Amino acid sequence: MDGKLRELLDISENDFDVVVRITREEDIAIARQMAKQLAQELGFSLADVTKVATAVSELARNIYRYAQTGKIMIRKRLEESGGPTIQVVAADRGPGIESVDRVLARGYTTHERSLGIGLPGVRRLMDFCEIASKVGTGTVVRVEKRRRKF
Amino acid sequence: MDNNQVEMLVEELEVGNKHEEKLWRKLLLGVASGATGNDLRETIREPLFGLLHELGETALGAKLKLVIERTPTFPTAELLPLILELCGELRHDSEQAVRGLERMLSELATPIVRIWAEVLLVPLIGGLDSDRAQGMAERLLERVSTTRAKVVVVDVTGVPTIDTAAGGFLIETFSAVKLLGAEVILTGLKPEIAHTLVKLGIDFRMVAIARDLEDALRQAIAMIEEERSRQRKTAWVRGSNFPSEGGEHDGI
Amino acid sequence: MAFKDRVVPTIRIGDALLVPIQIDLDDKTVERLQTQLLEEIQEHRVRAVILDVRMVEVIDSYISYTLSETAAMAHLMGCRTVICGIQPPVALTLAQMGIELQGFLVARDLEHAMGLVY
Ligand SMILES: Nc1ncnc2c1ncn2[C@@H]1O[C@H](COP(=O)(O)OP(=O)(O)OP(=O)(O)O)[C@@H](O)[C@H]1O
Ligand SMILES: [Mg+2]
Image (cartoon, rainbow over all chains, first blue to last red; front, side, top):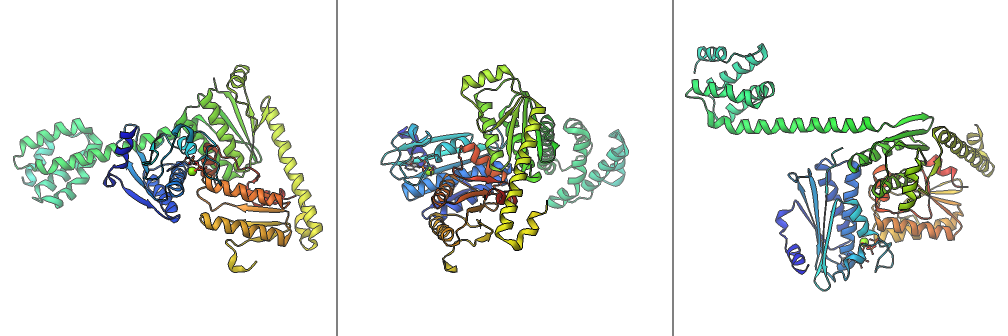
């Protein structure tokens, strides 16, 4: 797990179409907007564009809230075996998550004005979701969604 | 290569029809013009694409081989990248077409029918596999929104089994419909399915359940009536509070 | 309430306060929106607040939490909250995330919403 986190934290920004640095609250809206645009370019349905934008909104807000700064990286993948795919990596060197299993359960939150449904929601909206995190080192959430056939 | 040689080659190629003949002539004259680089590509692009479409890769390849053998000056090296590019375009086009057909098929599999003023019927057929099911849900929501339907009747008579995933999908779709402000009536649950659902802990509590289509329609009409009478009442209350507006709202 | 303090323009229709939401809701605006609505409920003694979200393209867990919180506050002031105009893609997203808009009545359009005021 530790190796995986290091590898993901060091992933090169050059491999991505868009990198949005999250430092202010306004950056959440920017990240969301970029995700939306790339999903549209890939020909996602309007509902799927909204799902991707919503997932990115959750990830960006988590960075802003719990790590203060971090980045959202997004890329389009045309040649994936399952069809055109959008991939998002949300990375920060913030406090980290103690138990990944626990944050993926609905209703777990350390924030007072929250429902604790962000990450479980992201997992349901996307086709793939992986979290690597270590207390004191940081958190990387990697998600992807492919274009539907029908 | 001069015009005569072009004509001879066209003859030798044993083309099937006038259209193909025209394309070959255009292609060979383009090459004969002595143009190179971008100019050449621009002139022969269209006839080459036409031939590829007409003959397919194999037959075009065989005929091009003949042309190249007969014409020592033929710019084979310049042609190759263009041909690859055109093959890619053709593949892209046919993929688009297949996608369109697939989408049409899935739409045919799940019709959405208006069975009464402001009532839509969705007869679900077959398994609720995820891609097709998601597409259906999206179309249903668009329809509910554009027609401003008040009630959606979902008939699952044609659904063989409902497992956890399919049950979860139905619950999601029902909640989404309700978020648009419409009601859902579920009908056509077979005893075996009801049995599994209870075991899985899926109760569809958020929707009304009907015995059969007739019962569903009766319930739907009752729901619409109830909303009408509530609206009438509102109009009356507002009318008495705001006499100046009363006239508009009382007229039923 | 002074005009400049309003985050969104509101319209009074009968006993209801119509709130068309067109801005991007961030932490600061949300708090100001809540303050504004509570003051207007108090001032106009309305029976219901109608949140019109036709223009909102994304509702994430944070926005839905805030909207539910606003509804709960309105409820304590004796006021209903009707949400109206949720767009189909937004409805599908909320449903898939399992977000319930607690404390809301849901309406198709304004006419339907007005019918839910009493
Ligand atoms: N990037 C992060 N760094 C550190 N901790 C995080 C990070 N992201 C999430 N967490 C922790 O995981 C918990 C659950 O996150 P999740 O997004 O599911 O819910 P939430 O943010 O608490 O509430 P909501 O997203 O519903 O508003 C958070 O309360 C926080 O403790
Ligand atoms: Mg969160």
